[in-house]
Image 1 (cartoon, one colour):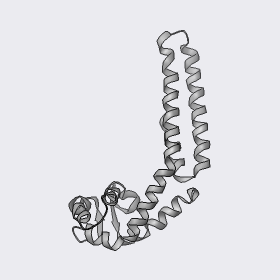
Image 2 (cartoon, helix red, strand yellow):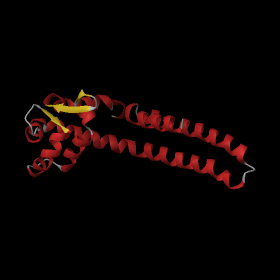
Image 3 (cartoon, helix red, strand yellow):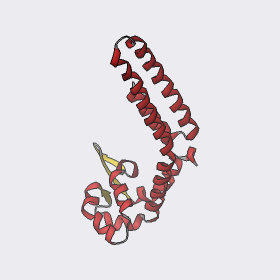
Image 4 (cartoon, one colour):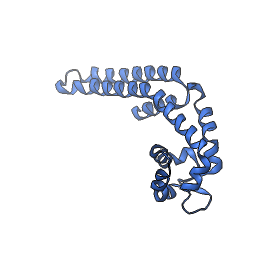
Length: 167
């Protein structure tokens, strides 16, 4: 259940905007607080075990507040990288499509990433593309993602649409 609450907070953070995120953090912490209070009530006579529910809730509180505080910065960073990738789409395709099949895969990035950096592509862009191929490109097999020139040029527009609640 706690994993579900963390997932709910993270998905809300990246899809529904600041107001919904804050509401979700408050509700999730209230739910976890109530659960921990019930457990605490039943463990009250068990000495050292009393601290566990309180520590658990405190950890949940710290993690959920950290998500709420860093979400906007992470989204701004992703939007900036998306804009940079879209602006350099043709050049990225030329430098990173190592096997010249018309799409960039993680295998291509591994093989040609350092060459692209030497030709003026920022390391952060190459690293972002390597780690986020599923959101940048499209699926071609079971958990196999590639990015075409169309995927790269449309990335900024797709990200702006995805995060419109934050703008």
